[in-house]
Amino acid sequence: GRRGLGLTVEGVGLARGERLLLERALANLLDNALRHAQTQVRIRVEEGALQVEDDGEGLPLPLEALAQPFRQGGPNRGSAGLGLYTAKRVAEAHGGRLLTCKTPLGGACLRLELPSAKEL
Image (cartoon, rainbow, N blue to C red; front, side):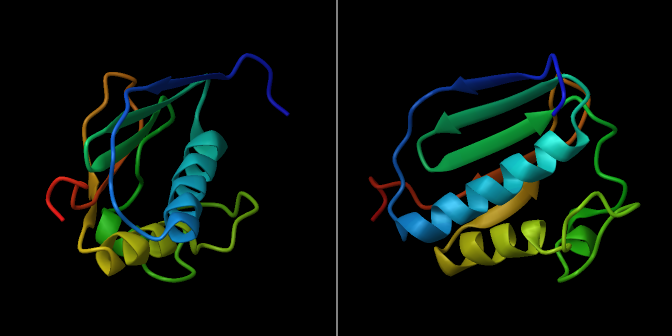
């Protein structure tokens, strides 16, 4: 493994959904960030949203292109190209969405938004 990679988790939030699917979506977003980060990954949690940021090179293609099955943005880094596709499908199955966002870390930032527990 890499040395010197920092992981920060900030915030607390609630969303209603299928736990195993949401865990899979988070695992996929985190795996993607860990593959591409230089030294930092940040997870932000808030009411109805989960954001994963890294300090890597950023997304090489628009999210819509990368969220297609078996699509990768560059050389194979040990993945099947299903992570962002799965995260997007999980978000949509819960009435939510997967978006890109800005991060002060300078790399990729993906935000999974779900209806909050208050909205349901």
